Image (cartoon, rainbow, N blue to C red; front, top):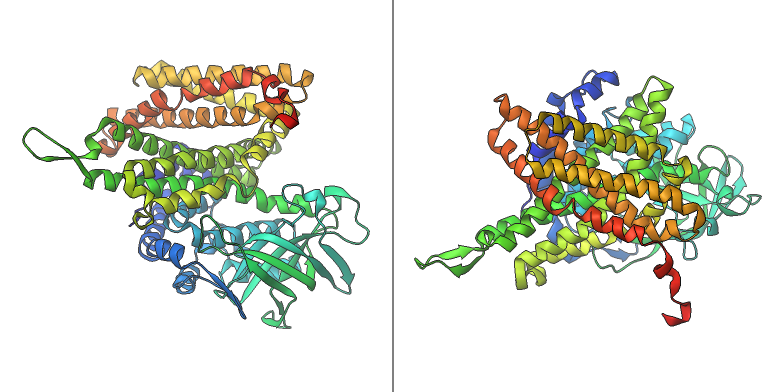
Amino acid sequence: MSYTHPYQDADFVLRQIVKFDELGADAGLDEANMDLAVAVLEEAGKMGSEVLAPLNWSGDQAGISLGEQGVQEAPGFKEAYQQFAQAGWLSLSVAEDFGGQGLPNVLSTAVNEVWQSANISFALCPMLSIGAMESIGHHASHALQSAYLPKMASGEWTGTMNLTEPDAGSDLAAVKTRAVPNGDHYLVTGQKIFITWGDHQMTENIVHLVLARLPDAPAGVKGISLFIVPKFLLDADGNPAERNAAHCLSVEHKLGIHASPTCVMEFKEAVGYIIGEPNKGLSYMFTMMNHARQAVGLQGLSISERAYQQARVFAKERLQGTRRDGSRIPIIEHPDVRRMLMLMRASCEAMRALALVAAAEVDRARYAQAAEAQAMHTARVELFTPIVKGWLTELSQEMTYLNIQIHGGMGFIEETGAAQHYRDARILTIYEGTTGIQALDFIGRKTLSDQGAALALLLAEIRITAEDLRATNTLHASILDGLESALARGVVAREWLLQSAPSDANLAGSASVNFLMLFGYLCGGWLMAKQAGLAQAQLAAGEGDAYFLKNKLITARFYAEHLLPRTQGHLAAMLAGSESTMALAEDAF
């Protein structure tokens, strides 16, 4: 199936909600304006639709293989990657000092939606490279940055993240991989599993970021260090030379993302170079992980958009039923099919807005001049990250499911491609921290730890939006009423949590996912209402594309009427407490 980037919606969010021109000016990035953003997104759209999307289905069918030379990527991927790298797509947000373009993270995020929608298996490779560059750029020595970042920014080398081990999944305190000092480097020994794009033949080198323990390291997460372990060691000129002792032992056979190799990596006294200080590796790796968590949330949007486009085309073409005049009826005229398509459309627009707003907060935190502003934007990034990762990926399960449902029996047949999106989406709620982990992070470290202060600021901002929209009184009543009702539930959820959690050790854990999902739908409703207000203002002023703006109003109303009410169910489940969740004895299961 073909893919077309929804440029008009991305443009609207960047221009009207993110206020990209102002962001670029505040950051002192003279060239970062909407003219540039439009040009970049237009070129990305071409690359996505013409080069990457045609490989999505064939890559899923062909998969990858492991031979004597290591992992062999799917046919066509190497050529596509070389074209991708030569166009400079990996360097968008990398610092100019290391060969990057130094553009805002939010523009890189908008571009990454294209890659993830067009071909999620392919896009995982540059996604991890970008995350690895973030970690190296923030924490490695200047010598390591100079040796590795320029080649990674150019796309000549790729990067990976090696955390998980057979006995250490989400519990990284159990990491056993060892790193022994040996002159100016370390010898790294251990096994890592679930390493995405851990090996391939698309580039001349792969830069592995590996968590390991020093011989004298303290126990637990406080004793983990981070190392660069390249596939090939560098010669005196900085070029790949001797093969390092880092090899792929096997590849996993997975439910989805078949063209993305998931490797078991073995390190046998592989040469590694420590990043930053000893025993601080987990905090350094979290720079990459937090980037990856927002990026995986974006994947939830991307694959939902791809599924929506497929469902929309099928619903217009599939005939079922007959009119009185004998003509056949396309199923898009059936109300229940409309309901499903509107759920997909409204969800995609809300997810896109939240993903880009969250990405822009990363920029505002990075470029803030005042310490108070930097702290505020950093707190907002911390708050948004688990919502983006958790809510968007959970919602993508429903959106790709609806695509199959709209296709009917044909959706269950692999040849239509609908099943691939459903299979590919299933991993999103698991890797880079499950939904449960995101929810615990959101309810614990991001809410209870500061007594709900950061969340209170977000709720106050949503309240201001609701009051401003009510004052203009130009929107459909259901948009205003829906946002205000959902906001009230968010306020109740926060207050109840702060009051009740101290007296019930199980409450936060049992309520966390409902708490996260409530705020996901609320944030989506907030940004949809905000977009509706801006669309209405443009229509009143006779500006913009009237057809697009009127549709934006309809979609915002649908979101308020059909998706915001879900906050009521999540609140009710929260308020039930933990008693029935924990009451059953273990041997009763």
